[in-house]
Image (tube, rainbow, N blue to C red; front, side):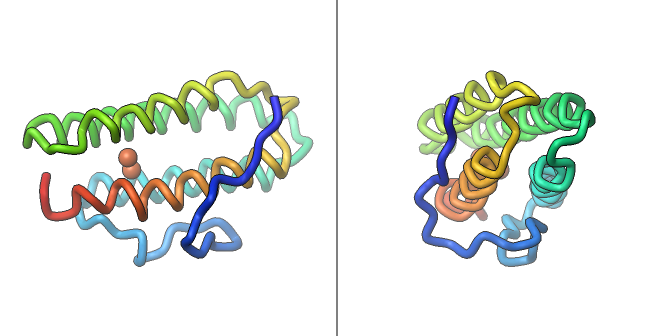
Length: 131
Ligand SMILES: [Fe+2]
Ligand SMILES: [Fe+2]
C-alpha cells in the first residue's frame, strides 16, 4: 500500500502536537484529539522500532473510540452531517486497519497527520456549538 498526503489547506504542526487552534470546545473531544496527535506523532518518533506494532494497535483503538464518541454526540442531536462525517471516519479507519508495522514510514505519517488536521478543521468544526 502506498500513502500520500491528504490535500490540506491548514498548517500541519511540526512536531505534530495538538494546539488550541484545533479546539472544538467539547472537553472530551479535545482531549481525544490531543491523544490522536500523540498517537500519530509516535509513529514518526518510533521509526524503525519494534514498538510500531503496539503503536498502531493503540492508534486504531483510540481512533475507533474517538469516532464513536463524535458519532454518538452527533446522533443524539440529529446533526445533519452525521452520515457523511461517519463515512469519512469509516474510510480512514479502514485504511489504517490495513497498515502493517512494516508499512509505517514517512508517507504514512504524512497521510495520517494531514488527514487529522484537515478532518478536524474542515469536518469536525462543523459540529462546533451544534452537538
Ligand atoms: Fe474528531
Ligand atoms: Fe470526526
